[in-house]
Length: 76
Image (cartoon, rainbow, N blue to C red; front, side, top):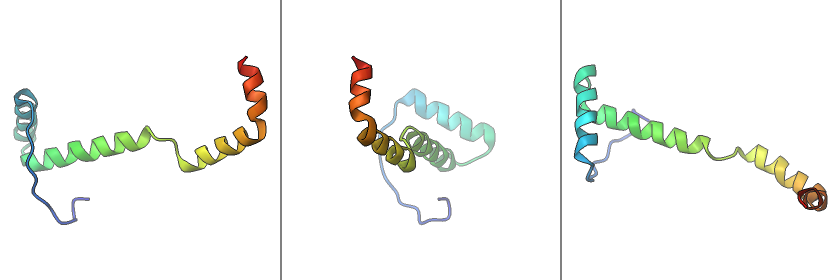
């Protein structure tokens, strides 16, 4: 992602969070934007992991189509 074109955007952040991010950047000798980029990438990856994989969902759907009636009976 780092090699792609950069785009400016504006937002507002809780001042304590911004202070913490600035402190991290300073202590690591990095630019603020690099730390923010890393945080955003981490968030994106975290959210992707919370979604089931497509192949897992396909197997689940096939199982549900085949055994849906049984699953309902077992749930009772």
